[in-house]
Image (tube, rainbow, N blue to C red):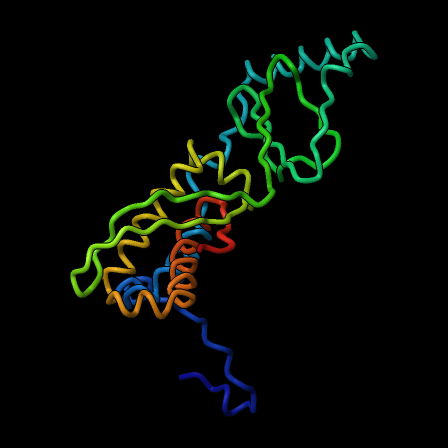
Length: 217
């Protein structure tokens, strides 16, 4: 038995354990919690396995060539990222470790590296009209506008190929799922609360993609 009470010491704080299965079974309220828990896990495919011996030889050869041809070569190795841009560099197909580059100057090897710029400014996506069946079996056509921004460039490029299309389909399916539990009268009278519920549900998924939904209308 523990004898902390004999020595007058306070017990060690118990560790907090989150039962993921219980959260999953708690309904829509647990959706965002589960997504945040899963986003903390190391994402497969976002970590580079490192360069091999032959690849390092190519890198060293390229660096040697840049040094020999300096200062002319420096004009081909330096690029500029704007204040609202972040840059990811892939070297021989491997994502370079560390944070995204920018804003300002960044260095890359022209023969071995490819870079991708991600715009962090607020994006607007118009969701076309689509049919929704309400709780009281009314069929209505609705549209929406989604405002979102890129937050994690590394997750974004490794998760999605077509961001607008993925966000559009996600908004449509989320609206169909949430509005199916509300009557036509509730939809007409509770537009603000419904928009907030849609935003929370979208954030629960898009946070794993590196996207932040600002608002939906």
